[in-house]
Image (cartoon, rainbow, N blue to C red; front, top):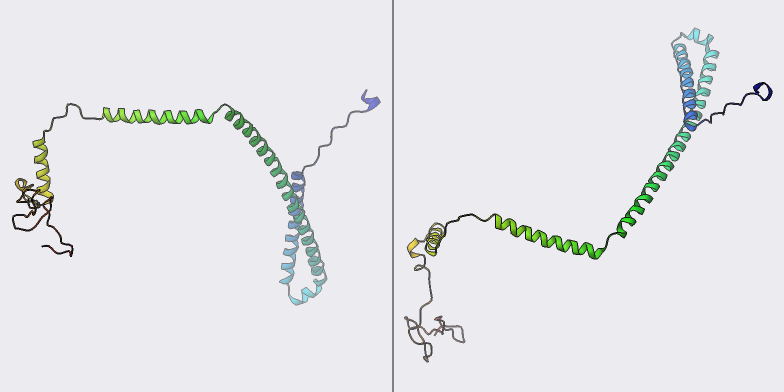
Length: 219
C-alpha cells in the first residue's frame, strides 16, 4: 500500500515563540563570539609598532567595519528577542487571566448558591440566641468560681477592718474614726421655734447650718 499511495507524512511540529526566542539567543551568542574575536585582533593591532601598523592598517579597517556590522545585527536580533519576550508574557498573562476569571466565576456561583440557603432573620435570631447562651455561660462560670465554705464575716469585723484602713491611709486612730470627723452643730432649740441658734448663739436653719443674710453676711 505504501508503494502505491506513499507513506503518510509526519505532522510538522509548529514552532513556538519559545523556540524562536531560543534560536535568536543562539544567534546572539554566535555574533558575540565573532565580535570578541575581532576586538582581540584590533587590540593586538593597537599594540603594534607604527611601521607594522601602516602595513596592516587596511586589514584593521576591514575588521573594524565587520565589527560594526555585527554589532548592528546583534542589536536587531536583541530587539526581536525583546519583542518575543513581551509577546510571550502577554500570552501567559491572558491564560492566567482566563483561569482567574473562570475560578472567580465558579466562586461567585457557589457564593450565590450558599446565600440562597441562608436567611438574614434566622441569622439574627441565631446571634441573639448565642448572646443569651454566652450570658448564661458567664453566670455559670461566676457561680462556679465563688469561694466554697467561706467564713462568715459580721459587722464588727467589717468595722475593725475599716478602722485599720483609716488608720493607715488617713492617720486616724481606730477609736476616733467617727469622733474626730467634723459635724455641724445641733440646734439648741426646737425646729418649730421662731429663732433657732446653735450652742454659740449663731442662727441656724432647720438642718443646723448657719443662716446667711440677703447681703451674704452672717447675722
